[in-house]
Length: 99
Image (tube, rainbow, N blue to C red):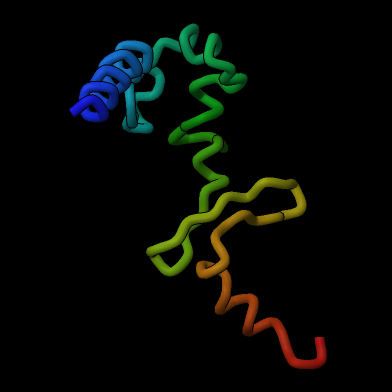
């Protein structure tokens, strides 16, 4: 019983400290976000650089593999970051026992 009360009090105290802010946003509505708040949190991109329908933006750096995996291009040379299982077939098709 003592353990339960201790866990409950810990949860109660920690839940008052933790603060969630916003959540997931629709990309098309990103201009309606408060950019000042985003800058306070450390974002260095403008809303137009994050998502733009007509111009190049961060959305263009996200790629899809086979409809179930995603990756992101992280360099001007085309370096791609993704999970191993997403790129395994492509890696295997470009490899051989000798190389």
